Image (cartoon, rainbow over all chains, first blue to last red; front, side, top):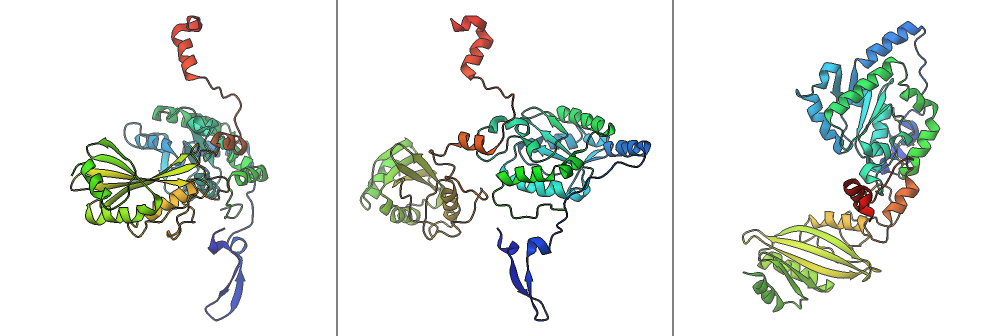
Length: 213
Length: 180
Protein backbone atom coordinates (compact mmCIF):
# COMPACT_ATOMS: atom_id res chain seq x y z
CA UNK A 1 0.00 0.00 0.00
CA UNK A 2 1.26 3.46 -0.90
CA UNK A 3 2.11 5.71 2.02
CA UNK A 4 -0.35 8.43 1.03
CA UNK A 5 -3.20 5.92 1.19
CA UNK A 6 -2.50 4.74 4.74
CA UNK A 7 -4.64 5.81 7.68
CA UNK A 8 -2.98 8.74 9.45
CA UNK A 9 -3.45 11.82 11.63
CA UNK A 10 -3.12 15.20 9.90
CA UNK A 11 -3.08 18.70 11.28
CA UNK A 12 -5.50 21.23 9.82
CA UNK A 13 -4.42 24.88 9.19
CA UNK A 14 -6.20 25.99 12.40
CA UNK A 15 -4.33 23.46 14.53
CA UNK A 16 -6.94 20.72 14.81
CA UNK A 17 -5.76 17.12 14.60
CA UNK A 18 -7.99 14.88 12.52
CA UNK A 19 -7.73 11.26 11.52
CA UNK A 20 -7.81 10.57 7.78
CA UNK A 21 -8.39 7.27 6.05
CA UNK A 22 -7.83 8.18 2.38
CA UNK A 23 -9.50 5.20 0.74
CA UNK A 24 -12.71 5.81 2.72
CA UNK A 25 -12.61 9.59 3.01
CA UNK A 26 -11.37 10.71 -0.39
CA UNK A 27 -13.28 8.28 -2.59
CA UNK A 28 -16.94 7.44 -2.94
CA UNK A 29 -17.81 3.94 -1.78
CA UNK A 30 -20.74 3.56 -4.16
CA UNK A 31 -20.46 0.76 -6.72
CA UNK A 32 -21.65 0.89 -10.32
CA UNK A 33 -25.39 0.67 -11.00
CA UNK A 34 -27.33 -0.84 -13.88
CA UNK A 35 -28.70 1.81 -16.24
CA UNK A 36 -32.18 0.85 -17.48
CA UNK A 37 -33.06 1.53 -21.15
CA UNK A 38 -35.14 4.58 -22.11
CA UNK A 39 -38.86 4.39 -21.34
CA UNK A 40 -39.96 3.69 -24.90
CA UNK A 41 -38.34 1.49 -27.45
CA UNK A 42 -38.23 4.13 -30.17
CA UNK A 43 -36.32 6.55 -27.93
CA UNK A 44 -33.86 3.83 -26.96
CA UNK A 45 -33.41 3.05 -30.64
CA UNK A 46 -32.64 6.70 -31.36
CA UNK A 47 -30.16 6.75 -28.46
CA UNK A 48 -28.47 3.62 -29.73
CA UNK A 49 -28.19 5.05 -33.22
CA UNK A 50 -26.59 8.19 -31.80
CA UNK A 51 -24.22 6.18 -29.62
CA UNK A 52 -23.16 3.98 -32.51
CA UNK A 53 -22.33 7.01 -34.65
CA UNK A 54 -20.07 8.66 -32.11
CA UNK A 55 -17.49 6.18 -30.89
CA UNK A 56 -14.92 8.13 -28.97
CA UNK A 57 -11.85 6.09 -28.21
CA UNK A 58 -9.74 6.55 -25.13
CA UNK A 59 -6.19 7.23 -26.32
CA UNK A 60 -4.54 4.62 -24.12
CA UNK A 61 -2.26 2.17 -25.93
CA UNK A 62 -1.70 -0.80 -23.67
CA UNK A 63 0.54 -2.87 -25.92
CA UNK A 64 2.15 -3.01 -29.34
CA UNK A 65 -1.26 -2.85 -31.08
CA UNK A 66 -1.42 0.86 -30.31
CA UNK A 67 0.83 1.34 -33.34
CA UNK A 68 -2.16 0.48 -35.57
CA UNK A 69 -4.00 3.52 -34.24
CA UNK A 70 -1.74 5.99 -36.03
CA UNK A 71 -2.55 4.92 -39.58
CA UNK A 72 -6.16 4.61 -38.50
CA UNK A 73 -6.44 8.20 -37.33
CA UNK A 74 -4.40 9.73 -40.15
CA UNK A 75 -5.60 10.35 -43.73
CA UNK A 76 -4.92 6.94 -45.24
CA UNK A 77 -7.55 5.06 -43.25
CA UNK A 78 -9.17 8.09 -41.64
CA UNK A 79 -11.47 6.60 -39.03
CA UNK A 80 -12.94 10.05 -38.33
CA UNK A 81 -15.26 9.69 -41.34
CA UNK A 82 -17.05 6.91 -39.40
CA UNK A 83 -17.63 9.12 -36.36
CA UNK A 84 -14.69 7.54 -34.56
CA UNK A 85 -12.25 9.82 -32.82
CA UNK A 86 -9.64 9.68 -30.08
CA UNK A 87 -9.96 11.53 -26.81
CA UNK A 88 -7.30 12.26 -24.22
CA UNK A 89 -9.30 11.48 -21.09
CA UNK A 90 -11.57 8.66 -19.95
CA UNK A 91 -14.29 11.17 -19.02
CA UNK A 92 -14.79 12.07 -22.68
CA UNK A 93 -14.62 8.64 -24.24
CA UNK A 94 -16.96 5.68 -24.48
CA UNK A 95 -14.85 3.10 -26.30
CA UNK A 96 -11.79 1.46 -24.78
CA UNK A 97 -9.57 -0.34 -27.30
CA UNK A 98 -7.29 -2.73 -25.44
CA UNK A 99 -4.53 -2.68 -27.99
CA UNK A 100 -2.55 -5.88 -27.59
CA UNK A 101 -1.01 -7.67 -24.64
CA UNK A 102 -1.94 -6.50 -21.20
CA UNK A 103 0.55 -6.85 -18.39
CA UNK A 104 -0.71 -7.03 -14.83
CA UNK A 105 0.75 -3.60 -14.15
CA UNK A 106 -1.10 -2.08 -17.10
CA UNK A 107 -4.29 -3.96 -16.21
CA UNK A 108 -4.47 -1.96 -13.00
CA UNK A 109 -4.39 1.33 -14.95
CA UNK A 110 -6.83 -0.05 -17.50
CA UNK A 111 -9.34 -0.90 -14.77
CA UNK A 112 -9.00 2.58 -13.28
CA UNK A 113 -9.51 4.19 -16.68
CA UNK A 114 -12.40 1.93 -17.66
CA UNK A 115 -14.25 2.67 -14.45
CA UNK A 116 -13.78 6.40 -14.95
CA UNK A 117 -15.42 6.30 -18.38
CA UNK A 118 -19.04 7.29 -18.50
CA UNK A 119 -21.62 4.73 -19.49
CA UNK A 120 -22.72 3.39 -21.86
CA UNK A 121 -19.18 2.28 -22.62
CA UNK A 122 -17.71 -0.38 -24.85
CA UNK A 123 -14.52 -2.45 -24.88
CA UNK A 124 -12.81 -3.81 -27.98
CA UNK A 125 -10.07 -6.41 -27.54
CA UNK A 126 -7.47 -6.01 -30.25
CA UNK A 127 -5.13 -8.80 -31.25
CA UNK A 128 -4.81 -12.40 -30.20
CA UNK A 129 -3.12 -11.47 -26.91
CA UNK A 130 -6.41 -10.23 -25.51
CA UNK A 131 -8.24 -13.36 -26.71
CA UNK A 132 -6.11 -16.18 -25.32
CA UNK A 133 -2.74 -14.71 -24.44
CA UNK A 134 -1.38 -14.96 -27.99
CA UNK A 135 2.37 -15.30 -28.07
CA UNK A 136 2.48 -14.40 -24.38
CA UNK A 137 0.54 -17.52 -23.39
CA UNK A 138 3.32 -18.67 -21.02
CA UNK A 139 4.29 -15.28 -19.64
CA UNK A 140 4.32 -14.71 -15.91
CA UNK A 141 3.24 -11.13 -16.31
CA UNK A 142 0.50 -10.86 -18.93
CA UNK A 143 -3.13 -11.86 -18.61
CA UNK A 144 -4.60 -14.38 -21.05
CA UNK A 145 -8.33 -13.64 -21.24
CA UNK A 146 -9.43 -10.05 -21.23
CA UNK A 147 -13.08 -10.93 -20.59
CA UNK A 148 -12.19 -12.25 -17.14
CA UNK A 149 -11.44 -8.71 -16.06
CA UNK A 150 -13.57 -6.41 -18.23
CA UNK A 151 -16.74 -6.97 -20.28
CA UNK A 152 -15.65 -7.17 -23.93
CA UNK A 153 -18.04 -6.38 -26.80
CA UNK A 154 -15.90 -7.23 -29.82
CA UNK A 155 -12.64 -9.07 -30.33
CA UNK A 156 -10.52 -8.36 -33.39
CA UNK A 157 -8.23 -11.30 -34.08
CA UNK A 158 -4.77 -10.97 -35.57
CA UNK A 159 -1.21 -10.29 -34.59
CA UNK A 160 -1.46 -7.42 -35.31
CA UNK A 161 -4.79 -6.82 -37.08
CA UNK A 162 -4.47 -4.35 -39.93
CA UNK A 163 -6.29 -1.00 -39.77
CA UNK A 164 -8.88 -2.42 -42.21
CA UNK A 165 -9.64 -5.17 -39.70
CA UNK A 166 -10.07 -2.57 -37.00
CA UNK A 167 -12.50 -0.60 -39.15
CA UNK A 168 -14.45 -3.80 -39.81
CA UNK A 169 -14.47 -4.46 -36.07
CA UNK A 170 -15.78 -0.99 -35.32
CA UNK A 171 -18.52 -1.45 -37.92
CA UNK A 172 -19.41 -4.73 -36.17
CA UNK A 173 -19.53 -2.90 -32.86
CA UNK A 174 -21.87 -0.32 -34.38
CA UNK A 175 -24.25 -3.08 -35.44
CA UNK A 176 -24.17 -4.52 -31.92
CA UNK A 177 -24.86 -1.12 -30.38
CA UNK A 178 -27.74 -0.41 -32.79
CA UNK A 179 -29.23 -3.80 -31.92
CA UNK A 180 -29.12 -2.78 -28.25
CA UNK A 181 -26.82 -5.65 -27.33
CA UNK A 182 -23.75 -3.70 -26.25
CA UNK A 183 -24.56 -3.91 -22.56
CA UNK A 184 -20.98 -4.12 -21.29
CA UNK A 185 -21.30 -1.42 -18.64
CA UNK A 186 -24.48 -3.02 -17.26
CA UNK A 187 -22.89 -6.44 -17.33
CA UNK A 188 -19.99 -5.04 -15.36
CA UNK A 189 -22.35 -3.55 -12.78
CA UNK A 190 -24.37 -6.77 -12.48
CA UNK A 191 -21.34 -9.03 -12.09
CA UNK A 192 -19.26 -6.50 -10.21
CA UNK A 193 -18.14 -8.92 -7.46
CA UNK A 194 -17.06 -11.55 -9.99
CA UNK A 195 -15.01 -9.04 -11.98
CA UNK A 196 -13.46 -7.60 -8.80
CA UNK A 197 -12.51 -11.06 -7.53
CA UNK A 198 -10.83 -11.86 -10.85
CA UNK A 199 -9.01 -8.53 -10.94
CA UNK A 200 -7.78 -8.86 -7.38
CA UNK A 201 -6.60 -12.43 -7.96
CA UNK A 202 -3.89 -11.14 -10.33
CA UNK A 203 -3.26 -7.62 -9.00
CA UNK A 204 -1.55 -8.38 -5.72
CA UNK A 205 -0.92 -4.82 -4.56
CA UNK A 206 -4.45 -3.48 -4.79
CA UNK A 207 -4.07 0.10 -3.54
CA UNK A 208 -7.09 1.86 -4.95
CA UNK A 209 -10.79 1.99 -4.14
CA UNK A 210 -12.90 -0.88 -5.46
CA UNK A 211 -14.70 1.39 -7.90
CA UNK A 212 -12.77 4.40 -9.26
CA UNK A 213 -15.21 6.83 -10.71
CA UNK B 1 45.80 -0.36 -27.70
CA UNK B 2 44.69 -3.84 -28.65
CA UNK B 3 42.76 -6.07 -26.32
CA UNK B 4 45.73 -8.29 -25.51
CA UNK B 5 47.86 -5.22 -24.70
CA UNK B 6 45.12 -3.88 -22.45
CA UNK B 7 44.92 -7.23 -20.71
CA UNK B 8 48.69 -7.28 -20.18
CA UNK B 9 48.63 -3.75 -18.72
CA UNK B 10 45.83 -4.67 -16.36
CA UNK B 11 47.53 -7.92 -15.45
CA UNK B 12 50.44 -5.99 -13.95
CA UNK B 13 48.10 -4.37 -11.44
CA UNK B 14 45.31 -6.87 -10.82
CA UNK B 15 45.13 -10.65 -10.66
CA UNK B 16 42.88 -11.41 -13.62
CA UNK B 17 41.11 -14.50 -14.86
CA UNK B 18 40.90 -15.58 -18.46
CA UNK B 19 40.59 -13.25 -21.43
CA UNK B 20 38.05 -13.91 -24.19
CA UNK B 21 38.61 -11.77 -27.28
CA UNK B 22 35.47 -11.59 -29.42
CA UNK B 23 36.56 -8.95 -31.90
CA UNK B 24 39.40 -6.43 -32.27
CA UNK B 25 37.43 -4.02 -30.11
CA UNK B 26 35.45 -6.33 -27.82
CA UNK B 27 36.82 -8.59 -25.10
CA UNK B 28 35.68 -10.15 -21.84
CA UNK B 29 37.81 -10.54 -18.74
CA UNK B 30 36.83 -12.69 -15.77
CA UNK B 31 37.82 -11.46 -12.32
CA UNK B 32 37.12 -12.36 -8.71
CA UNK B 33 34.34 -10.44 -6.99
CA UNK B 34 36.68 -8.60 -4.59
CA UNK B 35 38.81 -7.26 -7.49
CA UNK B 36 35.89 -5.82 -9.41
CA UNK B 37 35.52 -2.41 -7.82
CA UNK B 38 39.21 -1.31 -8.03
CA UNK B 39 39.45 -2.71 -11.55
CA UNK B 40 36.41 -0.79 -12.76
CA UNK B 41 37.70 2.38 -11.14
CA UNK B 42 41.09 1.93 -12.79
CA UNK B 43 39.49 1.31 -16.19
CA UNK B 44 37.32 4.38 -15.80
CA UNK B 45 39.99 6.78 -14.55
CA UNK B 46 43.13 5.63 -16.35
CA UNK B 47 42.14 3.60 -19.42
CA UNK B 48 39.35 5.81 -20.73
CA UNK B 49 36.48 3.35 -20.28
CA UNK B 50 34.23 6.11 -19.05
CA UNK B 51 30.85 4.74 -20.11
CA UNK B 52 28.99 1.91 -18.37
CA UNK B 53 27.05 0.37 -21.25
CA UNK B 54 25.18 -2.22 -19.24
CA UNK B 55 25.19 -4.42 -16.21
CA UNK B 56 23.46 -7.74 -16.62
CA UNK B 57 23.29 -11.18 -15.06
CA UNK B 58 23.20 -14.76 -16.32
CA UNK B 59 21.84 -17.56 -14.19
CA UNK B 60 24.13 -20.60 -14.40
CA UNK B 61 21.76 -22.88 -12.53
CA UNK B 62 23.80 -26.07 -13.03
CA UNK B 63 27.00 -24.42 -11.73
CA UNK B 64 25.06 -22.79 -8.86
CA UNK B 65 26.40 -19.39 -9.88
CA UNK B 66 25.28 -16.03 -11.19
CA UNK B 67 27.48 -14.36 -13.76
CA UNK B 68 27.48 -10.56 -13.67
CA UNK B 69 28.75 -8.75 -16.76
CA UNK B 70 29.82 -5.13 -16.54
CA UNK B 71 30.21 -3.83 -20.09
CA UNK B 72 32.33 -0.68 -20.41
CA UNK B 73 32.92 1.49 -23.45
CA UNK B 74 35.93 3.56 -24.42
CA UNK B 75 34.61 6.32 -26.62
CA UNK B 76 37.82 7.73 -28.23
CA UNK B 77 39.20 4.27 -29.05
CA UNK B 78 35.80 2.75 -29.87
CA UNK B 79 36.46 -0.28 -27.65
CA UNK B 80 34.29 -2.34 -25.36
CA UNK B 81 35.44 -4.46 -22.49
CA UNK B 82 33.20 -6.70 -20.45
CA UNK B 83 34.18 -7.61 -16.90
CA UNK B 84 32.69 -10.89 -15.78
CA UNK B 85 32.22 -11.84 -12.14
CA UNK B 86 30.88 -15.13 -10.86
CA UNK B 87 29.01 -15.01 -7.56
CA UNK B 88 27.52 -17.92 -5.62
CA UNK B 89 23.84 -18.54 -6.29
CA UNK B 90 22.95 -19.39 -2.71
CA UNK B 91 24.36 -16.08 -1.40
CA UNK B 92 23.88 -13.66 -4.30
CA UNK B 93 25.53 -10.51 -3.05
CA UNK B 94 27.79 -8.07 -4.86
CA UNK B 95 29.49 -4.79 -4.12
CA UNK B 96 27.52 -1.82 -5.43
CA UNK B 97 29.18 0.42 -8.03
CA UNK B 98 26.62 3.23 -7.92
CA UNK B 99 29.32 5.67 -6.77
CA UNK B 100 31.37 4.98 -9.92
CA UNK B 101 28.41 5.35 -12.29
CA UNK B 102 25.14 6.68 -10.88
CA UNK B 103 23.26 4.82 -13.63
CA UNK B 104 24.41 1.52 -12.15
CA UNK B 105 21.89 1.97 -9.32
CA UNK B 106 19.06 1.42 -11.80
CA UNK B 107 20.64 -1.75 -13.19
CA UNK B 108 21.18 -2.99 -9.67
CA UNK B 109 17.56 -2.33 -8.80
CA UNK B 110 16.50 -4.36 -11.82
CA UNK B 111 18.83 -7.24 -10.95
CA UNK B 112 17.58 -7.19 -7.38
CA UNK B 113 14.00 -7.55 -8.58
CA UNK B 114 14.49 -9.96 -11.47
CA UNK B 115 17.28 -12.19 -10.09
CA UNK B 116 17.18 -11.47 -6.36
CA UNK B 117 20.81 -10.31 -6.30
CA UNK B 118 21.63 -8.04 -3.38
CA UNK B 119 23.78 -4.91 -3.75
CA UNK B 120 24.17 -3.51 -0.22
CA UNK B 121 24.18 0.29 -0.10
CA UNK B 122 22.72 0.83 -3.55
CA UNK B 123 20.08 3.59 -3.49
CA UNK B 124 16.38 2.64 -3.73
CA UNK B 125 17.39 -0.99 -4.17
CA UNK B 126 14.32 -2.59 -2.61
CA UNK B 127 11.81 -0.34 -4.35
CA UNK B 128 9.67 -1.97 -7.02
CA UNK B 129 11.20 -1.52 -10.44
CA UNK B 130 8.95 -3.14 -13.07
CA UNK B 131 6.83 -5.65 -11.22
CA UNK B 132 4.21 -4.61 -8.72
CA UNK B 133 3.36 -6.70 -5.71
CA UNK B 134 5.52 -9.66 -6.75
CA UNK B 135 5.74 -12.31 -4.03
CA UNK B 136 7.10 -15.32 -5.91
CA UNK B 137 10.65 -16.36 -6.88
CA UNK B 138 12.38 -13.58 -8.85
CA UNK B 139 11.11 -14.27 -12.37
CA UNK B 140 14.40 -14.27 -14.30
CA UNK B 141 15.86 -17.06 -12.18
CA UNK B 142 15.91 -20.23 -14.19
CA UNK B 143 14.32 -22.31 -11.46
CA UNK B 144 11.20 -20.12 -11.71
CA UNK B 145 8.74 -21.93 -13.96
CA UNK B 146 6.92 -19.21 -15.92
CA UNK B 147 4.65 -21.67 -17.71
CA UNK B 148 3.54 -23.26 -14.46
CA UNK B 149 3.01 -19.83 -12.89
CA UNK B 150 0.97 -18.63 -15.89
CA UNK B 151 -1.19 -21.78 -15.75
CA UNK B 152 -1.91 -21.28 -12.07
CA UNK B 153 -2.52 -17.54 -12.21
CA UNK B 154 -4.27 -16.81 -15.52
CA UNK B 155 -7.20 -18.77 -16.88
CA UNK B 156 -6.88 -20.39 -20.30
CA UNK B 157 -9.46 -20.01 -23.02
CA UNK B 158 -10.41 -23.47 -24.22
CA UNK B 159 -9.81 -24.31 -27.87
CA UNK B 160 -6.26 -23.15 -28.20
CA UNK B 161 -4.19 -25.57 -30.27
CA UNK B 162 -0.45 -25.97 -30.12
CA UNK B 163 1.52 -27.68 -32.84
CA UNK B 164 5.14 -28.66 -33.00
CA UNK B 165 6.45 -26.28 -35.69
CA UNK B 166 8.75 -28.83 -37.35
CA UNK B 167 6.10 -31.57 -37.56
CA UNK B 168 3.45 -29.09 -38.71
CA UNK B 169 5.57 -27.70 -41.54
CA UNK B 170 6.49 -31.23 -42.64
CA UNK B 171 2.80 -32.09 -42.83
CA UNK B 172 2.05 -28.87 -44.73
CA UNK B 173 4.82 -29.36 -47.28
CA UNK B 174 4.85 -33.12 -47.84
CA UNK B 175 1.49 -34.32 -46.54
CA UNK B 176 1.45 -37.94 -45.42
CA UNK B 177 4.67 -38.64 -47.29
CA UNK B 178 6.50 -36.62 -44.65
CA UNK B 179 5.86 -39.32 -42.07
CA UNK B 180 7.67 -42.03 -44.02
